[in-house]
Length: 146
Length: 146
DNA sequence: TTAAAAAAGCAACACTGTTGCAAAAGAAAG
DNA sequence: CTTTCTTTTGCAACAGTGTTGCTTTTTTAA
Image (cartoon, rainbow over all chains, first blue to last red; front, side, top):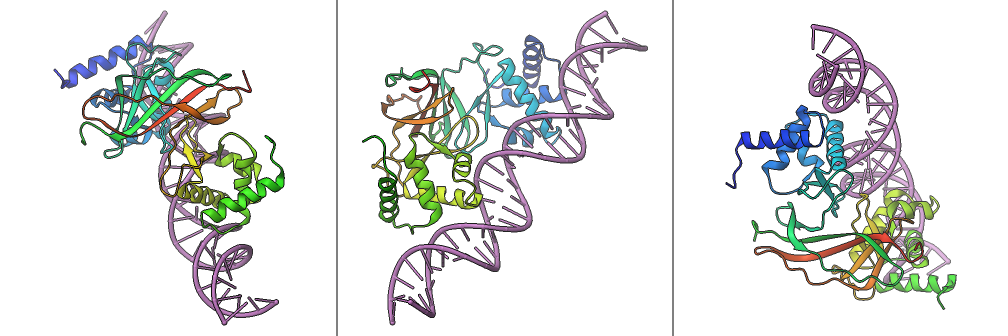
């Protein structure tokens, strides 16, 4: 049950693209597959490497941007100065991301995970400040490396 | 009392550098001055612009890295893919930063502030994960823009 | 099957950050 | 104050990340 078959992933990929009224193309299928095959977040560089140099850098960038716009993936800010992308759960939709979970970066394997079950406590800001979005990034050692 | 004179800042700059056994040079003085003159955080680009093209890009990068190493400034990860730097309070020392405060990015004026009085609540991670460092970045509208 | 629309590929560019090396500036001692 | 030694600076070159304009190819829909 935890391991998905290639066919299952392929179906899921097609569904996701259709649901978001995106045309089904090679790069979109391949990149979505990469996200579905593994649990963590991916940076542009990871995708380029894992896609096996099949796609142009620009195509990868544009595909990722399209996915962000459609609410299929969301971005994660990291200290190492490269944007990471992770699949959104069902609550996200076009133009509006509901990523109320925290992000965890493993200092050992360098993977980034969305910890969907960890809720961030309300933060009391000083007078005059109003919050629109809170991003919590925890650095530490992940389940697999501990 | 809130406005510092040029002489006050100049003294503070010299003190800070000597306290950290750094030689007093033009770029270090100028860059520290910039930090002391304003409340928010600065990105490398800001510094280059405000320093009036007096210093080489590489010098600015190396100076900032030196300050980070010495615990004079700390870095703030942001979504826009450029590292920001802010002055550390007294608790920081060489090789060890105590930046337990949250960071606030104003979506209007785009300034970044350290909210030193806002403490982050303890975060309960799932089993198997251990935290080394927690970074909280709040995006919203700051005191001056509200 | 074909025409219109969308996406991919290519080239070129901008920005951010790093490294090696030679020249210049700062510190320290006589 | 001058010389020596060390540190820092500036320059050139490079690597990585991300963007834009334009042409060709692929999808879609009719």
